[in-house]
Length: 440
Image (tube, rainbow, N blue to C red; front, side, top):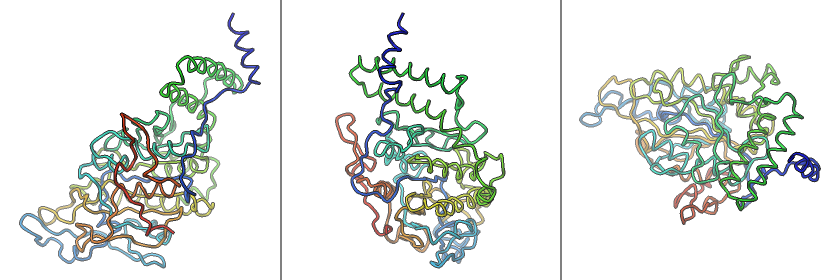
């Protein structure tokens, strides 16, 4: 009885579904240098003094007493200069070192918390104590997606990092801005294949569903939560059209697979994550986060008692990350793609006894780096003291990093706000400054 009337209304729309806008509005405040961000997060706290911050004084005083119950610990890896800039990088990252002239190394990062949970959400949300939206959610809210069939914010994570899904949560922002998690493996996203026999049948079903959704929404005064929920289902339907192609690496050349160090059919390593990130970036995803490791100490960079595992962990990410830079550069995409390589904190320069194979948490100073999209390449910004213990010059805290990322996307971090619980919230809260010295 209802079908003829429904069909008449659908036909009156010329068969076009009345979909919610895939682009919620461009909230840029000035011309952007970056169209998208690829955020590489190394879970567990990568030791700065063993990777990107050479401290020869530590090596010279290795295993001698600093003060009672505290001894100097030097690095087990040599540092070498790379590129025309001559920036030193440890032997853990020779491939990344080869791209150093495209990279700005920040050796003066600080975080707002010294435990894994607080530091992880601190660098992602700007708060170490309260639930807040992730930076990827803020970017999604501010810019939307360039591809209505894919989410603006996607996270490739084999396991749950410290703080779990809060890392990519949207909290009080509309649910549509939450990160969509991709799990490396044969089925990266569940239910990615359509159940309808043909695409035409699926289209008809979606148009009918859209009609009912719009009628339901009309009777509820455009409820924002309902709107977000409808949009999330629309995006899910669109992903059945677009996502399978994103993860189909058969289209990639043998030379590209070799560049990343990826064997055909392998979907488990960081090389797969990096290549998929490039394919997402090509297809309009605004913010792609790649997470290496999870909350298991044998599968992340947490090195209280076993720094020697860094050899294995570094091999997993070194070549793929360098390949990502090379690949984007060769395709002309590095100019408008911002790459961020970071972790929640560094590791301490002192240990409790001589011969200890490990380092404790260290949020007072650590290293991160950026590349592409208006970032000066081949420079070092800031420094730690001679021991790698404290910031010596040009501190960059997590709010400064967040403000700089938003700035490159054309967003003033002080003006991108969302009204919630009677006040205007922003990613950087009441903090943050753009680090102009690292920008071209």
